[in-house]
Picture (cartoon, rainbow, N blue to C red):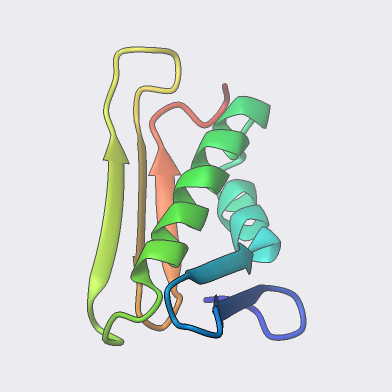
Length: 99
């Protein structure tokens, strides 16, 4: 989950309510997941981006609803998966974390 005092998710809405925006800093979540999998540089970047997208997309969902992203491929990473829920809890994996 997003860590108070470290991770931040902010929302904004224009005065006429025609434009909305979200921004997230989830560095500690990404760092924790990548450290647990001993990810290399490229794997950390790919997994971090997928986790960030999942957190942003799941924002506003019910607590038990999830949003997941999966990239499958035959390249060096062998796929990336990330899932987040409405409580901003996220997890993910990369097929070849050492890359």
